Length: 120
Image (cartoon, rainbow, N blue to C red):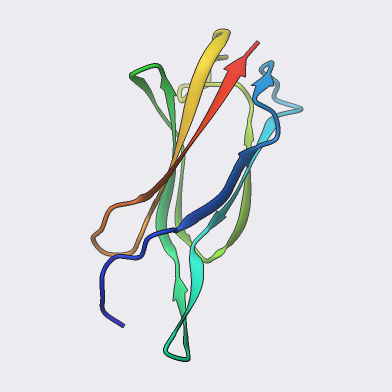
């Protein structure tokens, strides 16, 4: 079915805690819903996510991508945040933002959600 790029490919984005110490054995959990099932004129349609990016930001500085997942079917997903940056080093104490971007198949803007957290 052709039409405009689907919106709302993300939902229920939440972090188990917004303040945590870096830990490889007890990470903070990021939970989200990616993709959608849509009923259009009596027909069910699966809206998958072409790729999902988790980008780490500190203030206005993009620190890099923590993860990229490809070809996600609609469902619930959980990721562990260990308090390490894109290069594997422990993050310094302070405020951070995780930008979650879900791209539809083909062209079109991503769905976005931002989650702020503090490293102690």
